[in-house]
Length: 372
Length: 230
Ligand SMILES: Nc1ncnc2c1ncn2[C@@H]1O[C@H](COP(=O)(O)OP(=O)(O)OP(=O)(O)O)[C@@H](O)[C@H]1O
Ligand SMILES: [Mg+2]
Image (cartoon, rainbow over the protein chains, first blue to last red):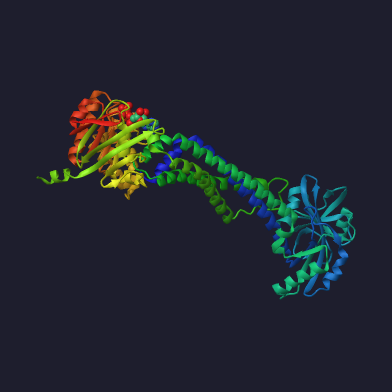
């Protein structure tokens, strides 16, 4: 008999309890995996938007009061354009609306005749006229979600629009979006002359240091505004920070519950086995080996629970992704690193939960245990 | 003198003025006990209930190291021994009145339990355990759980287990106390066999005169003191 076989035997003896503990751990780990995956996917989908547009710098209000950054005058564009290395500036105004059956749809107004329009390709129809106030183009995923085709009407808030084009974007978030000229969006949201983003494209061969210097001078020159690299979008986006904080909070709770579950199970099994532990000590087991046995049991519970939790978490993320709130806005980022981290966390939980019971078990007095 | 007689003259256990009390001196379980036991001796300990027999055996087996006086086993002082477990693993084999087998493990697995402290491979542990079960006549019961074995068979598994680490000293606390006379007889035969074959030093606490008669010497305890040897 190997030590591992002994551990397995101990766990199988209390099959239903071990199973319940595994369920507890795997639910905790599943929460971590699915939420982290969704949060990372959220971040990635925005990064992808900027990557698709080829944006070098993004300018927004420095203080965000809601998940969407607040508006500021489009007229600042002239000053931005005069700054060194700036090749082009495109203004946009975006917000999230409930559109017909879909509770959260990204609606964007793009400034006409800017590079903003260049990275997307029309699949069918045409782009809305620069001055048009009642036509929109929709992404392929949006068309699928809302069940719209060319010529269909689309109700956003109180206004009715006609779908005049369907486009494809490399970024999922844009695929699920509605796009219209900037002026139409300003009218819809009653923010005449305002934008909430400037996307900036720099001259080719601008060095990272020069980009950084430009970023600093934008922040200095325009007091309310900030500029960030599209790669670090999460640091400047309130929604992303909220999503990350939520992930953290829910994950921590799930993990603490998981660890307590392991501790409870192992502690109970140790209390039930005090007599056995006394026998093992009497027949020559070192106290360290008793600890090893109990810790190995809880580590194994952690490992198996972690692997099961990863499976469950991936399934949950896939399910969440399909919910109307999330569908079309992001794809959960479930990479191997997240899964490996989750399994390691589960093993650590097992170890943490087993530490106290192992200590209790190893302190047994064999003579006393045997007298019972 | 034969080689066997020379080795048998070596002192294995030396106990001097051993005292052990419980509950802050309220119970004096052992009150100044002294004796020596040579390597290879088979000794029985008798005495009325509560006279301190189990207390003595626990001390000799390093299950209890909080006593006064001196106990030397194989030149190791047991009082305040830093690692009694290590000492037990290398030197002591225990047999208990109520067997104390692990209920979830088969006979073969029970016998392997003490061997985890040795650097033996799993297959080696298994072979050794099987051989030991054969010496106690249980080769046909190796894969049975204790619950499926008779009392006598369980005690024989426990005896095989006590030999797992090739101890120098076998300690048995009323090994036939829970058995009928037929099974007790069988256990006694097994113990005598082990004593003869392995020249093993053995101490048996017993109420059974037949067991005591089979040993070479008897220590009698009364109220925590030795009364007579015979
Ligand atoms: N841990 C302990 N705490 C308190 N008192 C104890 C403890 N262990 C033993 N005693 C007491 O010490 C005395 C001797 O006990 P011991 O178990 O050695 O007797 P024994 O000779 O083995 O008796 P029996 O034949 O009934 O097994 C008894 O009075 C017992 O109550
Ligand atoms: Mg006793």
